[in-house]
Image: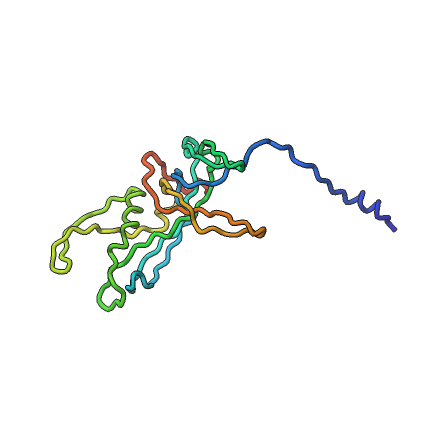
Length: 205
């Protein structure tokens, strides 16, 4: 019969502490980040908004920070409470969930939901941020001739890999298992990345 010592020698297990690199953890911060849209999904829903029954095509996605972001600068707070400047290298490959972008639909005959054109401002900004041309035409609304912007429907397959500047802000905080409150971050909206290049399908995320 094997003794306890012999068993331990046979099934060896070791712990070797890693070397301390001296690098300080760099926390996430609000700001503008260069990246590409990824993980796009869409859903169409009816719901109540501003006491109106409305219908929207909702776009959900993430933005993955690109290597070009290394040229940007950010001010972060250290554990000692002091502030320092870091470059954007620390945030490359960070995937940030975006707030949903809503494309509010116009009712046709037989629909029970209402028009909510004023809610499409963010969708208009989103279309412009990915380089889409928005057509304008005159239409009669409530007896008046007005200029309206025709907002296109975007396909999911057209979004993944699209370059954008993500404007990131504080999301809803969460509490970790130790009871400490932790911040979360969301892409609040996007702007155009003027020199950004679209990722091709053969480039993995």
